[in-house]
Image (cartoon, rainbow, N blue to C red; front, side):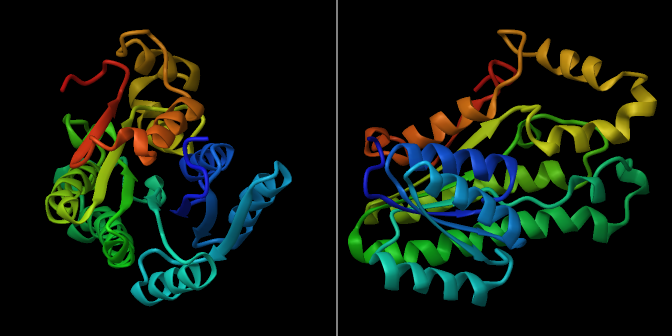
Length: 263
């Protein structure tokens, strides 16, 4: 098992990406501490993991609240003794931030995703790193999107937010790598199993004249294999990147756009 006995904290564990990563980590032997702003979906994921023979403790944690994150991490240390992996899959509802041209967008709505995504990632990474430094080991991870590297219409501050997270991954790594801590990201593209892609489609439905099925086909046509990535495929890469087998990877975001973007 690639993550046997590793202690992993997953933020946003009730969402599509967070829950997929939780299942994959558990399958590879990790002991999980799952968090989310809404407890019910996190408890559902934890129950699924435990039913499959894994270990998962759910908790209600607002990843934008420094005190809440700090308190929960101390609970993890008290129970497990350490934190080996911190995975941030926190998102905010895209319906609130998409669909308005930049020239018509107010500054608060533009700034909201930039502030929320970067604050959450910074807080969870910084507080986890403080627990990892004494052990001279650990992996800090997050998820971004193709918006970080290409211009797309009607996405407001979402694209700048993803680009900022990738910059933060590099900055965290250059400071933490000498202390044995790797910092890496994943950049998947348009996974139809997540609500994110549907949120992106809705503002464009009328303008594009496309059905939901046609929208997926259009996105898939931009990848090399002419299909979209599954959550399972993304989660399998997350397992590898969190494992000791990826010890040479830090300060980078793995391109999972299936050829949509070139590095």
